[in-house]
Image 1 (cartoon, rainbow, N blue to C red):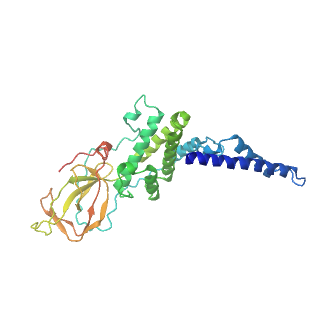
Image 2 (tube, helix red, strand yellow):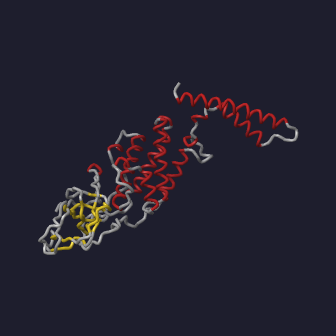
Image 3 (cartoon, helix red, strand yellow):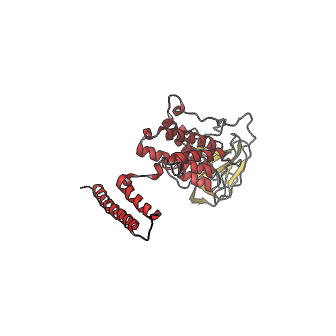
Length: 344
């Protein structure tokens, strides 16, 4: 006999023992002349009836649609949808903070690029939204895009908690971090948790269990995605993948490390600054990268480089931490709305 079968047999024995005890206590309580029929008697009888008539071993209250009690999944989806509708996305830009140890002397402001319009975030698009995609396809597609959007917001702002494979980041974990940092409203975090819970229920019970729940959850996921796409953020793009750096201002002696030139763009796609950082990573020009650092590699000696625009000598840093940003997967198409491609 397997362990699970033994556990089920043990639980049945306990249930058979509880039923007569609860029923007996109820009968004694009612028969005792000084105790009238009250809530205690009714409660004991209810326990016996529930154990006798229902499969309480497999009962999961969080999956019941009980709007009166406010604990049903469908009611939580409706509540989350109202929270998302009223959630106000901050106008503040999610800008990356400088690393803990970087004394960066170069901050070159580049003239704004004209003619760039804001991204249309009214309706997310994708093959999973095209007909005849149903509610389940929309839910699964939007849930994955929510996860990716959270990764990008956290990655651009320097909020990724650990250096994990992309597929290992969970939407609920990132939403918790971003809500705590006041990057996204608490209502969006709660809605993302409801979406994740809905997916768990569908995994357990199948999408045919309640199509109405799937349909409403897919609408909620699209609402959350639209809100997340409105979160303003800065971007980091590799301008020059390998920048020669030198240990002296005369550019006579090469420094003993590699360096990369990173340009920062705002949410409109305008380049606002560029910096040279030491790095051990390998990049390609034009890649959009996260704002991450290798705090185990700190360079305390100054370094200089030749500015590619003015051909003058610039100090790259006085002391700096090694840049460790990761390039986003190409299929995510991470970039500011309307940003031009710049490779030199």
